[in-house]
Amino acid sequence: MSLLYAIHLHHRARRSRTERGQATVEYVVVVLAASLLAGLFIRWVNGTDKIGELLNRVIDTVIGSV
Image 1 (cartoon, one colour):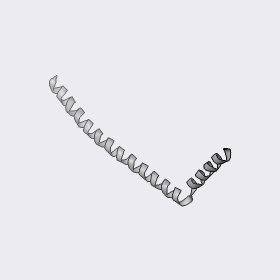
Image 2 (tube, helix red, strand yellow; image 1 turned 180 degrees about the vertical axis):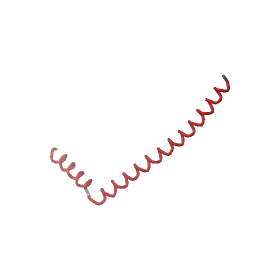
Image 3 (cartoon, one colour; image 1 turned 45 degrees about the vertical axis):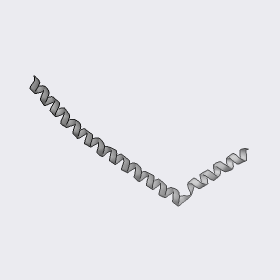
Image 4 (tube, one colour; image 1 turned 90 degrees about the vertical axis):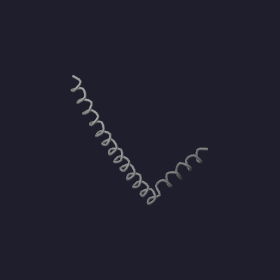
């Protein structure tokens, strides 16, 4: 009985190390994807001036309603 339990613990320990490595890789992939999307968004914002137009409209609306 104790031999089977030892084999089970060894298998479980090996599996958890593999899963920890997989979780780290998944985290890195998610961070890289988020960075890529943020970079693309920043390039788009700098090239179109959409944010400036939006802020101008908001400020004009607030000033107009006062």
